[in-house]
Image: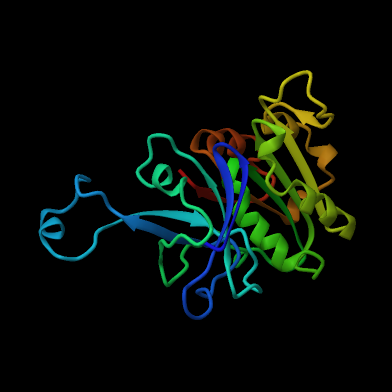
Length: 243
């Protein structure tokens, strides 16, 4: 781990890189598997437990960095209190070692989105990570006509890339629409509040062209059903279930 930024007690941005060479090649939207040696008492295949090989506890994390940065991968990681990996990953600091797969995987990419299309990306929590990779790689290049990013989190502190995204908006091809669901009423936040479904209810306000729209959803499973029903008929829907 070469860098760590704590946003909240349960949300961090980390950078990792191989001890030798560059990071695995990847396409924006893909994920990488990380791992740590499994505890001796963690259940696993009997043959594996009897062998001398180190067993790993692995989990997949979407890549937030651009493939143009070959020296590191950036990941947005949320603490899962009853998870098998993140509670053990949380105490690690810069310089700590962990296992990383040598191949990025996943099909939640722009490969099926034609050049010049309008894109509506809807993310909840850490689901913004694959969209950050797309934006960091392609914003301002003409890859799309407009990229509308809706990001739903609980509090303003969880808007991991707020400053960077607000700067991207000045380029003209990115629209950033964050919304908070549990921000204290007396906080300085003056932006949108409430579920992302409420914003989607007013399609005209989004200024999109339905015939060319591609909707990318990286949200929790419940939201996938809700949002898919709202955008039915708007265009082509692509989904990624990240838990």
